Length: 112
Length: 114
Image (cartoon, each protein chain N blue to C red):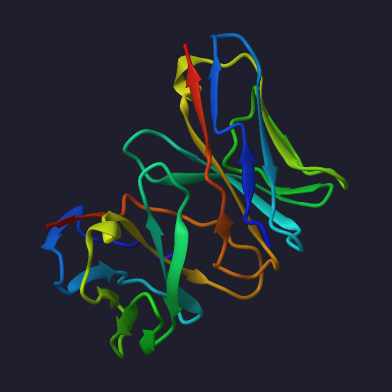
């Protein structure tokens, strides 16, 4: 499993766009990039997953450059309710089961 | 379709007692994972089960901890003779298939050992 590095914490204000970057220099060819969100006192929630270029859903966008050694989770116009810990995970999807390996994550605080 | 259910949500045990944590996966999901989260830390994988089978228990302490997922009923994580260091949030997740990173988590059980 590729090791990931992301900022420990970030601060933002309501209405701003937030970009959280994750480094994964030793990502393998078969690896996908997955992001989870965890609110205080709740279980993590799957946000988005991608392999290359850009993926967008109703919650966020995921940008992956051509070399795939990093990725950026983009949250448009955050609100107070986006205050959470965001985890970046990297690993192969196919070929077996997936025990998720969580790092420390990025603690995002959104201020009024 | 109800989400993953865990009970109890909070559990207080004295040192030496047993703790039983229950997890009902989402309907149609036959893959269950247990994770533990210590205060201010990320989640750590404990065990992966399919119906009636333990597939990977590499993250579970060898002693005092056991898990099962019977043919009928919820998955159970059992901790015998609890110690203060077992105090943590225990999360269960389920998925409809094996090879996916999209797992659905329950609300967790917060175990406090006094």
